[in-house]
Each structure stands twice: as C-alpha cells, then as structure tokens.
Image 1 (cartoon, rainbow, N blue to C red):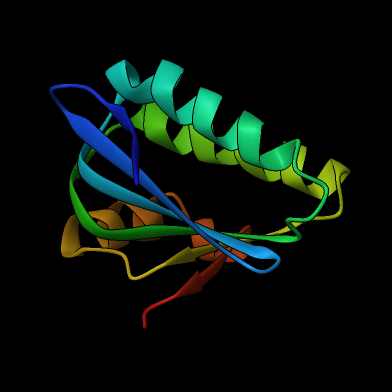
Image 2 (image 1 turned 60 degrees about the horizontal axis):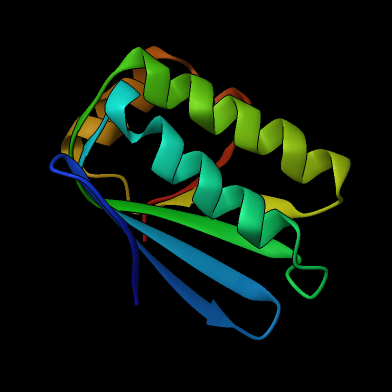
Amino acid sequence: MVISKNTDLQIRVIEQDDTVTILLMGDFAFSSHPNFTATYRRLLSNAAISRIIVDFKNVKRMDSSALGMLLTLLEHAQKLNKSLILCQPSQTAAAVFDIANFHKIFTIQSE
C-alpha cells in the first residue's frame, strides 16, 4: 500500500505480525520530512509493532536531513522499546551511511 507520495519520494508500508517494513523509493531528502515523519509516528503509536525495518534498496539520493530524520526515528523507537533496522542500502545510501558512521549507531543489514 502506498501511504505517502510526493514528487521525490514514495513510501510504502508492509505490516506483518509485530514487524513493519517501510520501503523508501526515490530521493530521501528535506522535502520528505512531513510524509516520512507522519508515517513513522503512526507506526510507533501501534503497540502491536515491536520492530521497524526501513528498506533503502530503491533510494536514489539522500541528504543530511534524511540522516537527521533517521536519528529522530531511532530516538523515538528506543523510547518505546521498539527495534529499528536499516536494510538493503542502495549504493548511494550505503555510501552516506558509511560517511556518517551510522554502523556505530544503527543495525544495518545488507540483505
């Protein structure tokens, strides 16, 4: 189901049992903030969800505000005792995560 869409980023959410996957497609940038934030706030408010996976395989571009959004999501998830995994980073996302040393903060899965 597509729940958020703008000209730069599409966000799809797949819920299965206690896990939700947020699929990001396109450019994850400052303009994505309202849609991304609204999406994860709705998911965090669901007590049945204990694990959130953010899938980056279709992310074409990221900027520093995307990193800030992920850090904020992590902070909120930790307060609610929910795990957060970043997975399948595209080449672009992997390079940004590497530069930002996100592997020291997040669980990042390549597959």
